[in-house]
Length: 233
Image (cartoon, rainbow, N blue to C red):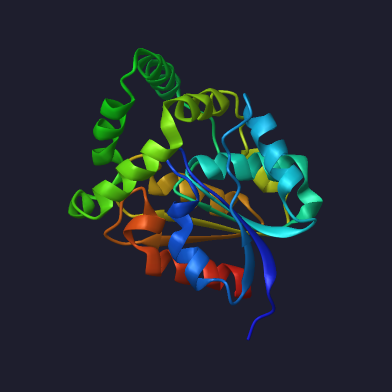
């Protein structure tokens, strides 16, 4: 059996620790897992520093969606503490002008009290068409309700401040795994191929018939890939 290692799992934008439920239940034989709250920090730099302050001295790091942005910034701040990196359904680059505008509009909508409608509108982007049904929809809505409008808006503000991480990937020598759903409508396959190509020890894995929320939609596949990354990369 593989040795146990410390593993930090960073949730995404509409997520809390429950998004990692399958991994928490099925990777505990190879990892001591910590899922940070990621609900404070006005900038991506602050958010990453807060997670680092709570994390073990050295650890494997995986980030989903927004959690990938946090993970890149953690690597920037503390490269010697991170033994390997996995990012799922994310991007190493910064937002396009269109995405920046959309984030600002979303923040304004939260401030107007339209959070529930924002989440309703996001479902078609977050989930593969086959998964826009129960139990997936209720899971996302319940999780988003626990996150709440204030934290959701704060996370958007932090994402507006993130740095381009492509040069960071070129400079790192740790194993890097990029994972995404084939039909991810938010973070395309090409963005993950780029991550794997930029990293010296990069690998790319794709999950078929899956949208943006790989760890919810195809939990067994995501967990198997993360186990492979933890043990063999």
